[in-house]
Image 1 (tube, helix red, strand yellow):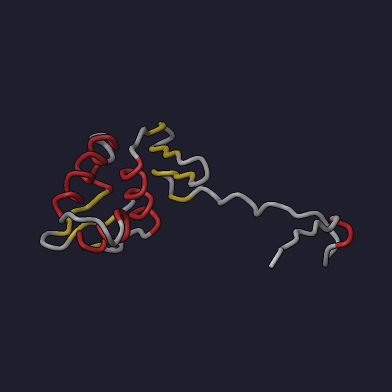
Image 2: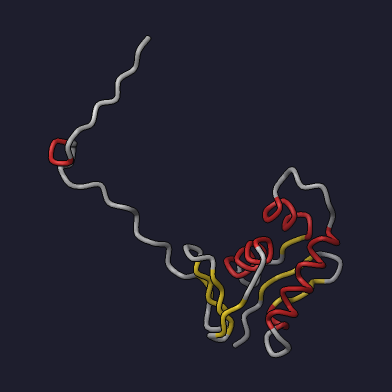
Length: 124
C-alpha cells in the first residue's frame, strides 16, 4: 500500500486561518522564586540561579505545589521517573544542593518534614 501526503493551503483548511503556536507557558512561582519553564530559567529574589537538569525539575515540582508535603519516594518517582534505581538519599543530596544555591537567606523555603520528605513553603 502506498501512502500520499496532501498539503492543504491555510485558506482551504477547516477554520480557514493560519496554524498558530500555542501561547508560551506563563512563569511559575511566587515573589521569591520565579520559574520560566519555556527557557528553563530560575530567579530567586530576582537573581538568576544556575541549576542542573534534575535540580531544576525538583525545584519546579516543589514550587508548583507550595505547602504540599512530598515523600522522598513520590519525588523520586515524579522527578527521576519510575525506572530510576535509587532511594530517598538521592533526594536528600539534591535538596541540600538546592538549599546551598538558594543561599542562606532563602534556604528555609524548602522545609524538611521529618521522617516524611520535603515541602516548599514560600516565605511571607
